[in-house]
Length: 452
Image 1 (tube, rainbow, N blue to C red):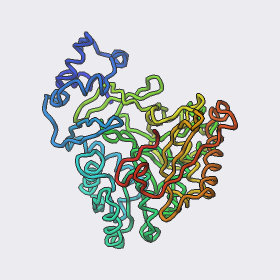
Image 2 (cartoon, one colour):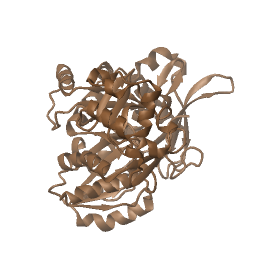
Image 3 (cartoon, rainbow, N blue to C red):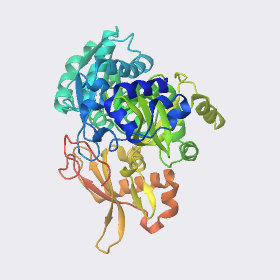
């Protein structure tokens, strides 16, 4: 991507960005080199997009032909105009997955959109991108029941026998819930496309086994997307192979990523998205319904060039065999406020999730949980994990003990900070069990939050 050229176009045609530059006393004509570009001030949601009327954020002050809504972690809605050209660019990320991992050029494919429909960013955007692939000649048929589980389970048995494969697209915990419904997935050649949350490789292995997916490298692919700019990158068989290698080697993963948790790892196309790192967080520039220049999305993560990534994993014993384009990698942890601090140690939801995905636990729980630090009657703080039980399971001390042992074992394996900072007597988590759909912690239909 020629970021200097993009900068000048945005400075010329986007009223809000012209005002932003004027506020910072920047003459666009003085920005002529890449070094000038990376010296520009960052744009942010609070400092840029929320400070200007929606039309002024768009090229020539004209809102695009569709608007998506996101509520983010604050609940305050943000509006993101889109156009057909934006969708075509992003459809290329879907195409890489459908073509390279799912072989959808040669297979009659039923794509089932399980993201929420309506004004929210996921559902209609995914629907449109899948239809773009059909327009390109892929034998894809799309059905969009959205996040209505009953409708999903009603339409799939009727339609699936007419296709060579079925692809479910949705948030990881919701797709797991659909897979766990007991339909005969192995006869329908199931594939999954996920977005919105980091998941563990234990999760991928578990769900692949339950869904009858023989090859986890090619059968489950995650997208890295934001409401601000659509899909920014996607998993490839190569990135999945590398991630699975690192999942078994926490110390090696920490050496590479600098954190005691495993991020989402994707590849991206530098011709359409430009990433930068800023204090272990990500900036990107890209042309969208709202063009964004050095936009700080507050996601913790970083960028690794293709050659450096392959050199690193080879030095640590992996000779990659899975296919992947020679493109850079971006890794994403998510936002830091989704952690809890306990005796000075950062505890991440990803650490807890692995404990719930072990064989002795996974059949008892749905995978949903809420992580918090709670003061007990003696005013001592305890790490508390509230866990949703699988359908039909009832709370019992035996189950709580099994869950607690597994969570602690994985916490100590994956998070060395936890083992060193937290006194041994305070390390075992307090486990509280709730039945499926508990109104306080796991209300049906709501987007789940893993921390409080």
